[in-house]
Amino acid sequence: MAAVAKPTPIKKSQIISELANKLEISKKDVNLFLETFVDLAYKETKKNGAFIIPGVGKLVLKRTKKRKGRNPATGQEIEIPAKTVVKFSLFKACKEAIVPPKK
Image 1 (cartoon, rainbow, N blue to C red):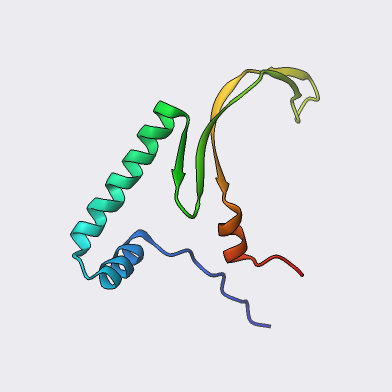
Image 2: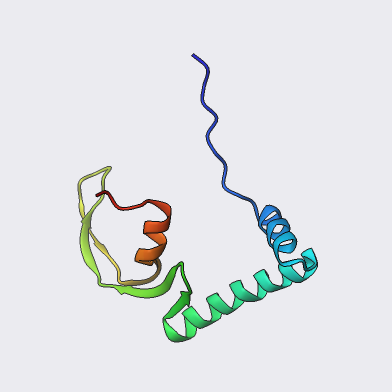
């Protein structure tokens, strides 16, 4: 039985080409836009704790509490320190556009 090829995600260069063709602008301008957009997302998430990508989802900074855990190798109880993490939540419309709800 032949192995089924796993689909690969679209690469940045392919995104740039698609957008440049669709919008009829240069790849250089699309690349500049994407880099600026990503920088803005990082900066605003760090500054305000959240960044919304319209129609897709939201980047959010979350603070976790310190908690107790277990070392899987030894079973010894350990203290896991509090930390700040970045989460991404998809909007309902995005989820439903990709995987329609069952009826």
